[in-house]
Length: 219
Ligand SMILES: NC(=O)c1ccc[n+]([C@@H]2O[C@H](COP(=O)([O-])OP(=O)(O)OC[C@H]3O[C@@H](n4cnc5c(N)ncnc54)[C@H](O)[C@@H]3O)[C@@H](O)[C@H]2O)c1
Image (cartoon, rainbow, N blue to C red; front, top):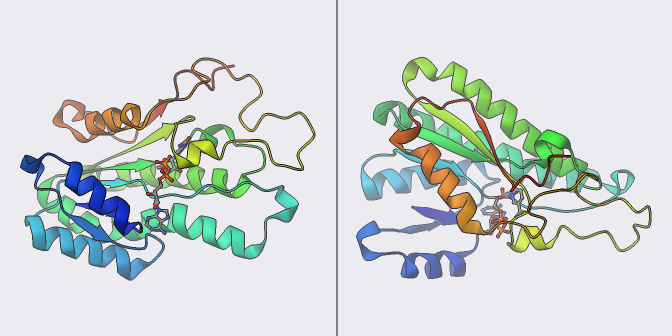
């Protein structure tokens, strides 16, 4: 079940998926608790069970800290952090039934911080802490929880990792000791890491934070 707020993107993704995948789509707003519950209901109605949940929806925005307004902060936290809370809350009873697992998508910004996106980094750090907490709390129920932390990936969000127009302090938007694959990864590089974490091959992996950044953040 592919879910996003972008209906056109969903239709394209489902039409390009292999027929054998039986992929379906569901439009939803990740920031909305009822939307997340409705999405889980749709998945159960369509497939009868839930084995894996991937919390991937997110936005990125850049601003000097003193210029981040209350509305910017609330929106960032709602879409990037509360969304994970809503979706997992709705999904966990079904994951308990299937001994399933969840993979959340945070960011290396949630580990190292990132200049001019403190609200984004705070939300991503929250995802990491929530995921680890759930791994412990629901370990006895047989559910695994893991986080993937991408570095720069060449998507719409990755393209936003540019200096601000009025930024003249010479700081990079990523940690200054940038190294490794500075060209950025591709979406498939993240998909394969997520697929592995969700698979039975990773059955002893829970509460882990898998950095997928081509060594960008090692300084
Ligand atoms: N691209 C990078 O460099 C990078 C780095 C670190 C982490 N990430 C994380 O990876 C995840 C995927 O991002 P991406 O790089 O593929 O960017 P993207 O913009 O291509 O994908 C984000 C998706 O989230 C959806 N979305 C946004 N707000 C939503 C909402 N309220 N409800 C439902 N869907 C919503 C968008 O429609 C879009 O399809 C995000 O959580 C992002 O923070 C990306």
